[in-house]
Length: 204
Image: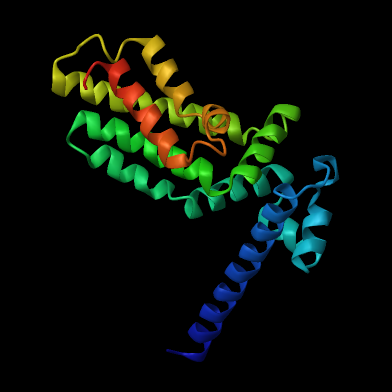
């Protein structure tokens, strides 16, 4: 490796470490007990121990920082497993895995996700992330039901907007947050919801 290449690798590693520090600082602030109105790029910089301009250089805006945090949470919350959902040949197992992946994700950092989604409600123009990701989840449900309709000969299944809406709602954070209590662990929530989703699709 040439000296220039070596320094380039080291610089890239340093940038990635700083990025992670900033994201973890953002996660700590949003997932903490403080008032969310105090959240700012400056507060994140202080928490991460970096210059304010470093945060702006890496993320450019509050919206992009929050979007990057959502990706960071998804990465650590196992959302890569969605690939398994679409590779699963058995329709019932695919639907069950869909539910399990989202329940596991929602449970991975419940408080931060709850507050991050709340920010999207309070300031929808600034924090569009939750709405965009909910739309992506609905699209994933639609795609999966379309595939099931083709393989199971249920032509009308994919056209049922009500079914897509129901499955999308049942895999939402809000549904998980209501059902996951001290008396019902995430695994029990996943089992309850997956049984219901499979029955709704008529493929149990």
